[in-house]
Amino acid sequence: MLRQRIMAALAALAVTGVLAVALPAASASAVSSVAAPACVAAWKSSAVYTGGMTASHNGRNWSAKWWTQNETPGTADVWADQGACGGGGTTPPPSGNCNHPNWVAGTWYAAGSIVKYTNGQFYRAKNENPGYDPVISTWYWEPYTCGTTPTNPPTSGFVVSQAQFNQMFPNRNSFYTYSGLTAALSAYPGFAKTGSDTVRKQEAAAFLANASHETGGLVHIVEQNTANYSHYCDTSRSYGCPAGQSAYYGRGPIQLSWNFNYKAAGDALGINLLGNPYLVQNDASVAWKTALWYWNTQNGPGTMTPHNAMVNGRGFGETIRSINGSLECNGRNPAQVQSRISTYQRFVQILGTTPGGNLSC
Image 1 (tube, rainbow, N blue to C red):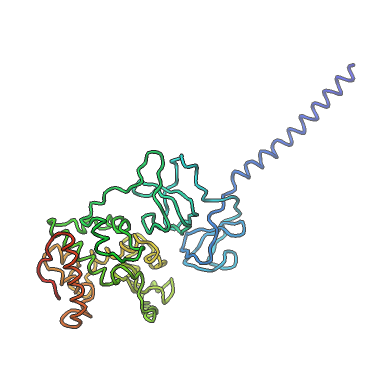
Image 2 (cartoon, rainbow, N blue to C red; image 1 turned 90 degrees about the horizontal axis):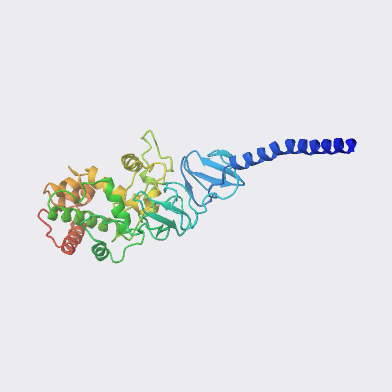
């Protein structure tokens, strides 16, 4: 009997020993599993990536060192290996969960991803995209109800209502959204909010009239003459043209062009437009912001900014001079000038105000 008890005890010790050895191994495996990062959104050959943007490929995460497109991770020096990964990276939490991540520009989002935008509202990706602003075309994002959070954005306070905007641009490209414009207004809070109600409406009408002229009624997103594309790279600048010699053609409501303008606008707005000028044609809010940057900060061929021209009583004609005066003013192209004036007169009528004086340049 004693011998049986001793053998049973030894057997128990043997089992305990096995468990003592096995448990740390299982624990180490669990730690390894927890520590393994999830794979971010898969690399897309057609997507544009700029420095710091990430993608996964062949079970590994990669980080772009600079602007790239159609260069496969693992085969091009532009990609830095971030190590092995596993699982998915952008599966949205259950619909009742309001702990959705903040939207981050430049991050790839899969269709169905839910983010919290800077205005406190939630948006769901209808189609995958490389971090486009949720207030751009409804092709990419849609408002999302999370708990009791309202999906309608707050009133913009802009002197032009959405109905008036639609009346001004009945045939506009869906890219040029009203929400994209109102989201961009915060970049320049003095725009259309300086002076009397009449002055505010006149400035808004003047800005939109010039944008209409530059884009054929908000139809064209990019410059139509592709033969000019390679001309907009000023190689004398120390920063050059990192996105390529032909990457700085006209884009957006005021057709931003030239590498130095993309750099200046990007620096002012905190967006790397020199490295990724394509944002201006892919993100409506960015496009509107670049137009507002020019309107509020640049004299162009004139002597003052278009904003100052309108709020200081210099009139609509002076905004034409600041935007394209070297080609249109002083009798150079009266038909183009009249086209801008006619559009402005129609827009102020829609806003229920008068055009003021000094309409021509």
